[in-house]
Image (cartoon, rainbow, N blue to C red):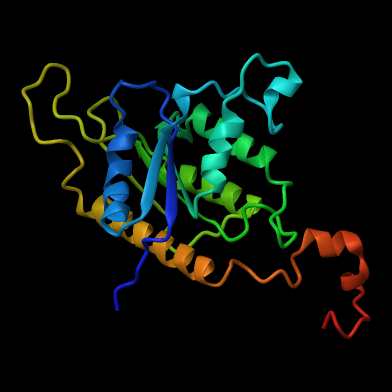
Length: 243
C-alpha cells in the first residue's frame, strides 16, 4: 500500500564550505533525495548554511553574546517546523566539514527547549545525513552526525546515511563532468547503483519513520517528560502510578 507523505516537511542543510552560486557536489547528491521526496508530495526546503551569517557558539542567539549578526534564530524556525532534517556534508581530512560541526553546535544550543509535552524540542523529528568526497570517511562522518542528532532528540531510522566517494586522492567529485581540462564526460557518480540504492532507502526510511511519528503525535510523554521530572511527583518509583 502506498503511503501518503504529503503532510510532511523536510529541510536539507547543505554544509558545503562554498557559498552560492558556486556549484556544490554535496547538493548534487542531496538532489537525489530531494527529488524523491518532492515526487512523494513532501514540502522540501534546502538551505546552504555558508550563505548565512551564523557565528560559532552554543547559545540560541549569539548577538546576545556580542556577535554583530546571527541568522541562526530564523533558520532554526525552518528546521524546527520540519518533520525531517537531512544534513549534507563534504569530507575534509576524513571528517565532516567545519560548517557541519557548526550546524550541530547551533542545533545543540536549542536542545534544552521543550515541546508542549514537556519533552526536549527535537522529540518526534527524524534525522539523516548525506556525504560526498574523494577520500575515505563516509561511515565515520555519518557515525558522528547521527549520534549527535539522536543525542539531541532526533529519531534515526535504519539506513539513515548514504554517500559517494571517488578514488582516493585528487580527482573528480560527485557530479563533475570534467577534471583538469579533460573532455566533458557523463557526471561522475550518478550511475553508482550503491549510492543510488542507499540514498533511496535512506529517503524512504526517513519518510516512513516521520510519517509514523507524525500520525501518532510523536512519542508519548510517559517516562520522558522534563516537566514531569522537574515536578517530581511522577518520578517516585514507589508510586504505583509510575509503574
